[in-house]
Length: 99
Image (cartoon, rainbow, N blue to C red; front, side, top):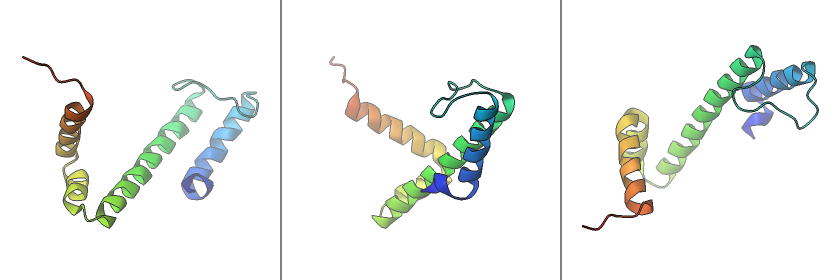
């Protein structure tokens, strides 16, 4: 798992040390956007890195199943991909107005 090795693991250890320093017990954490500034910086970096991992896995799966056009759109034209995704989501998951 990505969080157990490398940079994500290091960020997790550093965040844990800050939590312990602040007196939080095992399993406790601050709400999103809360906690010391150094903790918030590490959370932001961790989130950014997780997003990159997620995007890499997503495009790898798309390419594995021959959906290279979609993977290319996602990687090279993210704004166009996002607009198309949102149109499809609305078409499939929001009630259509009659009339």
